Every structure is written in C-alpha cells, then in structure tokens.
Image 1: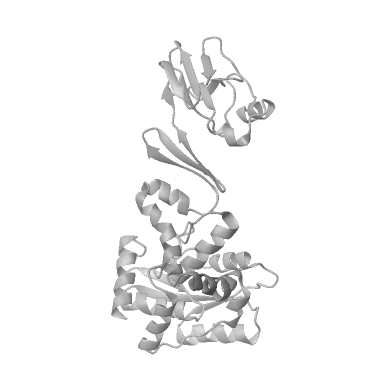
Image 2 (image 1 turned 135 degrees about the vertical axis):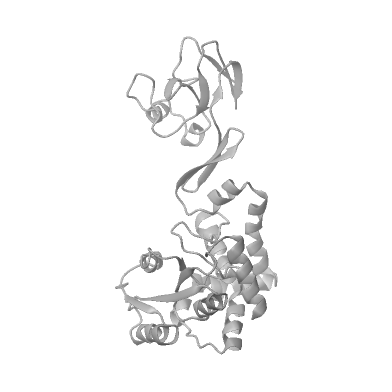
Length: 323
C-alpha cells in the first residue's frame, strides 16, 4: 500500500496535477480503480470529494452502483439519460459534469495499455492518456496497474463494485480477448506496449505535448524557426519565415530576389494573394497541387501579404527554380 501511495504522490508532484493540500473531485464508478483513487488521494492530504454519474442504462445494477457510491464513497450522484448513446458520447456526458472543479479519474497503466492498442488500430498512432487532459481532468493512477488497485482495496479493507457490462465495450474486448492473446505471444506484452510512449521522453516537450493532445488542429514552436503542425491525424514540420536576402534554399526550391523586406514561409490557412481576395488554398486547388504537398510549398511574403507562389504565381522580381 505504501509503495503504491508513494508512486502516486511522486507522479502527482512531477506533473503538478493537484496543488499541495488542494481540492479534487474524484469521478467514481464504484469499481476498484476509482475507490482506490479516492482513498489514496485522501491519505496524501488532498481535500477529496466524489462524484458519480448514473446513466440509468442497467436498471437495478445502475441504481445499486449509485447507492454504493453515495453511501460508501460519499459521492454526489447526478442522473443523466444515456439511452441510445455511444461509448464515446457516454464518456463525454460523464465529463460534462463538474467542469468548474478539478476532477480526477481512476485510469491506470492497464487502461493506458488498452488505449494505446485501440488508438493503434483505430488511428494508426501509438498515443495514450496524458497525465492531464485538455478539459483539465487529471489521472493520478497512471503509474499503477489495475491488479494493484484491487490489491490496495483488499489490503485497506475497502469494498468495491464490479461492472459486468465492461465486457461488452470496446475496452472490454481488448481487455478480455486481445490482451490475453498478446500475452501468449510474450508475457511482458503489457509493459512493452506501455513503452511505446517512452519515445516521448526524447522529444522536445512541445512536440511531445502535440503528439499526446486529442485529435484536432494545433501548432507548436520547436525553436530554430521550425514549427510542428497537426491537422487531425496528419503531422508535419514547417520552417518559420526566413529573410529572402539574395538567394535561399527551401526544400527542392532555390529562390532569389534583390527586393527588400521579403521573406519565405510555408502556407497557412487563410493566406491570400497580395492586393487580391483570392485564397492561396484556391490557388493550390486550381494548380492541382496535392494536399500532401501544400504545407511544404514556399510562399514569398511581404508582411502578411503573399506576393509570389513559386511555380504558380510569379512576381517579376522573384526568381524560383525547383530541382
């Protein structure tokens, strides 16, 4: 018990998940993970409350879970109609409650492994659960395994519930069928899958954060005039504006001009030709430039105005040759 508690405390401090002695609301289901979470954080001196969302999907079982969370864990119970919702929609429904508070979930290293596998299959990316998600929810139990939280509860004399419906979810399929097969291939399958995230330790922090972020659009500065850009599942590096002083190289392009005040940079959504209303995106479409090549295509700019698109829109005093 003490070793797990110390591990969680180090993780919370390392990632600054909860202020010392601060308030945190545990999102509890009544299972071993969230029961362990509430007890561990309380024993570490945090001011802990609990919140349970009853989706009313399993009749009496759902009501029993809610009653257990209220009576045993002291949880506030919120009832929301989850009928007909997907797993993802149910998750968002749960996470919509209590946004004004710092919230914590009982996700463990075991959940992390399942998440990595699911995202590898569904997205082709080995990403997992970040210590703190974009909506501010923290995950203090990520350094602990599921069997450790169950052992903690038993050793501490803590009751917990078992949700039989978990087996019917995508995560349940991975947990009950896929991971046992992978362990037959190699007994350290779980630990080795978890190591798929270790490569982030060698990445610049900004890039690691970008990779860990939920799918969306984001741009981070890596320094040295280089930016990493993410659009949904696509990721590329982009050089920042550089002065066009005489002659420069940009990828396959050699660009030259003696005009003062010109710079070269990559395309950004919303760019337009100087003095015109035409969008650069439309220029690319008309020129049949593949979408995969647009981010690397150089633009010659003066301030925010695009004065030339090499190979497509020429300027009399800008020369550009592609190898």
